[in-house]
Image (cartoon, rainbow, N blue to C red; front, side, top):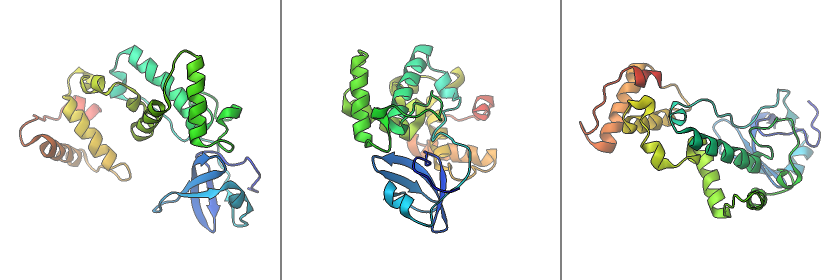
Length: 226
């Protein structure tokens, strides 16, 4: 595909000097690219478009993140879920230019243009907008929520005391849930292997964090369903 200004979007795959990259983020006049096995790199958008080796690979537009169903999140009270989803919409608009709840093809509002304004500028605009909606959130608080969302997803936008106090499916010890989450996050780039191996890893994680026998762990249907 012939590169044209404005053709890039978050999640877009490109080729540069024969290497395949994915567009991870925009920050004003710069774009953040990542490639398998390499640290993310930032390059000026103008320099990127001027590079004769640039190829924008033909593919459907996708959003950077998609939050599917989560048994832990679904176990929280509806009001807590609604508040987290509301925050997610505002945070993703500041991050990506268009809220997750909106059509990915919709152009961003001017104050959230990812190619014109830096992330900090977009965050300031969002805080000003929320203040007008009588939902005042300070910049540092908004940034803390944004960091939590990027690190943990939708669950990062909830009251963590409530999360810790909500047993999954009403049965599973929250310490088991946390250990399972840790193991799955550790294995995010590779298969966790067989169920027996996953159970062994979770049991080992529990023993490291709480001591041998401190947290009884008897894998059953709730664990398997998770």
